[in-house]
Length: 127
Image (cartoon, rainbow, N blue to C red):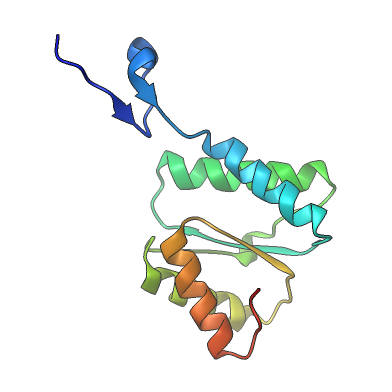
């Protein structure tokens, strides 16, 4: 049988050939990091697609902040295309809510770059 390795997918039957991310744990790690930096109000930008990666990352993040006694309000979760432009649009949606938050959890790098651009264009300093 030819060698086959699956990247970012887990199939129990061939788990010895799978390399995957623990998306839920990644979300929890992000939450712990932001909590350690004393953040206590959160928003999120995530993919509009109902697939495992964004769903598990967001759930892990929610679980991580919930463990510390915080929640993520649904109105502070913006869902868009998982692209730079999607991140820009999602950030605009969050800003239009006019609800302050101190930390933002974003699904992927492209969306984060778009969000940073939008926040900076609106006078926010993004570290």
